[in-house]
Length: 288
Image (tube, rainbow, N blue to C red; front, top):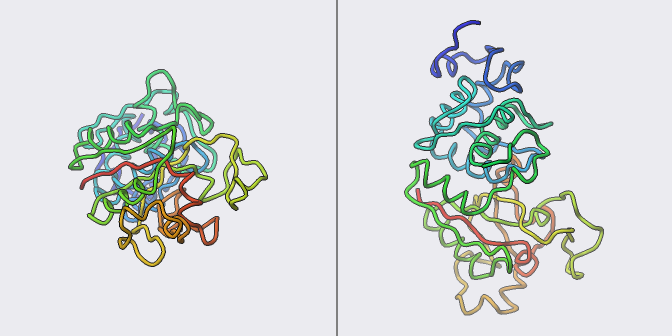
């Protein structure tokens, strides 16, 4: 067996394939370094595909956007050694994860996202794109990743899994974004794109999709201010319950599913605050 290259040698040898890498899905891929560099320069390319890895994807998007060299080294170390340091966070996926893959998901994304999720799990292994339960990421875990890596100044969350988010919580998330923070929103994905588990009925005749489970299932990263009506910040908190606020158009851009400029109205044209709120559950806020 040939001697493995160092991280630096690996990252400076684009196009070279290494059949003895720690992840089976990467053995036959010769474009790994190019894929790593592409994602470091434009994190929008980080894509979970159909795998239930939206939490790690949202985290990795933020990491690559603000600490691209850390991201590159993290993925390279995983490929070469099967474990890596993500800042101060030690990530060591199981053998099942290293042998796994997800159809339609690039090996670089599987390595980066599945490893983080699998390493944080207890009994459940993230070994394929069908590992639905193993892929679930709660708000507390998101906060822990942001804090434990030591690369950000702090993180907190405001999420209500039972009753969902409110207009006040949504506008708080917008305020955090406006002050320079990173904001990950927890939603039900059907509001921004078709998903599995939908039924052919409009939700309460409001022109929005109906899902079998009324539970949050997707993390997205806010990429623009949240605009309600004509402005992002002109609404007083006392107006959040008013019909004029709730029936105003809601506009923002977000990162999701490898798309860094998806608009809130991607699926529902002229989406209003009232339509969006039943699909919104809260946010994670990160201080740079």
